[in-house]
Amino acid sequence: MTSPVKDQIAEKRFGFGKNWQQFLRILNETRLQRAEASLKEFWPDQPEAPAFLDIGSGSGVFSLAARRRGARVHSFDYDLDSVACTRTLRDHYFPDDPDWTVEQGSVLDENYMQQLGTFDLVYSWGVLHHTGQMWNAISQAAERVAPQGQLVIALYNDQGWKSRFWTGVKRIYCGSTAGRWLMTLVFVPLFLIAFFVADLLRFRNPLGRYQSAHDSRGMSVVTDIIDWIGGYPFEVATPEQTHQFLAERGFELVFEKLTNGLGCNEFGFRKTESSGQT
Image (tube, rainbow, N blue to C red; front, top):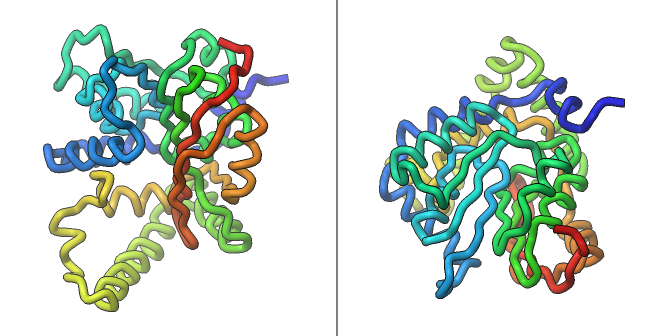
């Protein structure tokens, strides 16, 4: 029987790290400030530096934002290109910093996860649904939360048949070079047209989102489109499923931002009981 990590390696996957390398070319102070502001929504100022675990650090921007807010940060990602992105930011902004570690690792590797210990804030934004074993990944992340600590996650919204449709698109994208180009040529223009029409209907400047080129979390519009089209493996969950799953593990819901369409539901949970694991 193969391990979850070996199974993960063997599967055809989207190159998230290569996408993030493109994003780092346009990273600036405005984007970093927006990333920090998004953390402040669920992370109040504290007298002591919290321990922050970034599961699937991707570009490393939110690890950097957490470190700039004074946290002791441990970042890891399964994708080696993403690890390289995060290390690049650490070495540039916090060289030789003992309070920010960056590693390659898998949330599905139980031995790796257990040796990390527990953290005041476990953060995994739009990551756990790309592991191929989402509920196992959520469980592993939850076990790393210290008593009274927070688990902050974003999971793709379950849209029924629409989610199944997008699963097919992502499989085609990741299946071959031809599939990648085909899906890009079809869906990137469609998204851009949809954004253009939506901005017109809301009486907003259609070029505004591209002039600033970032959303409220400091991310790039085009980077996010490619991430959406290609992001595979791909799993989804309803808010009710997520609430129940974590309530059974001793967590209470603190906040949520729900979407009725494409994208992620955002959750913040606080751990109210000890799981008995360290």
